[in-house]
Length: 286
Image 1 (cartoon, rainbow, N blue to C red):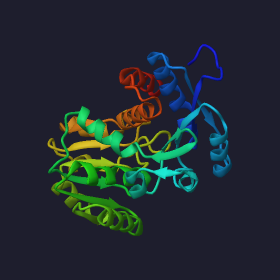
Image 2 (spheres, rainbow, N blue to C red):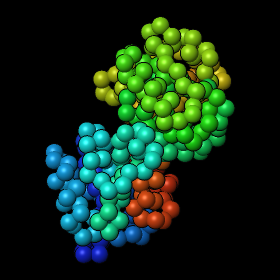
Image 3 (cartoon, rainbow, N blue to C red):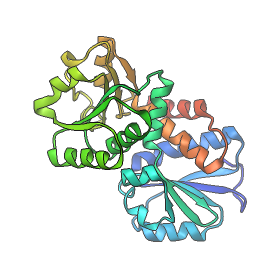
Image 4 (spheres, one colour):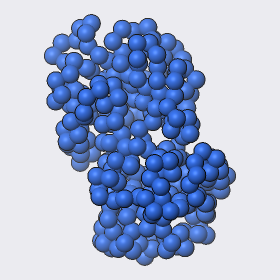
């Protein structure tokens, strides 16, 4: 954090989810300090997105923001430019202010791809199963379909209409081979035929579902790669059981770190101090 706030200080912010209001400032302010940048990252409770974005345009030194639920879609109507992947996904989590021109993008999907790469897991030619059909899964599914070239993808969930909508949109926006399945009826068969498992539901999340898992341990194989988007707790029951079976596992916190590093780099145009940001997040989550 800057030692003093003045007219030269560049401001970044987060609007939306209260959890992000505590985690994101910690990550980014530690990173700004480590990089020696005169930036500060603050949290705002925003109800009127349009008025908020008008304020961003009006304030000198407001460099950008993180956007979380419930504003990721509503903010799109107030931007000047939206990156192609964010248009496919239908939501924005990052805004950069380029001299009053507001540019929106999404780092959730690219951040997840970076997490897989850092874990040494290639997605090209793999069979990817998405468990869930919400906004986070949507962002990652498009990133995988557009940039990772899997053999095929399946989206499995409890609500057929949401699953079918996501599958239809991915088919329309990419050339990926993607299909739908029902969680109750098709999970065992899907686990047998896929090798990359990406979980994106609230099951296993602190504090209400911490003892739960969306996938019975009996369906896990040592050759599975299991990524759980849930990051509270740091290691979910799903990941604990997957490790016990011998699976390769990737923490949801790695998605959070990597999407944040991509935001940092978009705002500052310098490489993010990744280990500083990772340490800050893991310290908070533990």
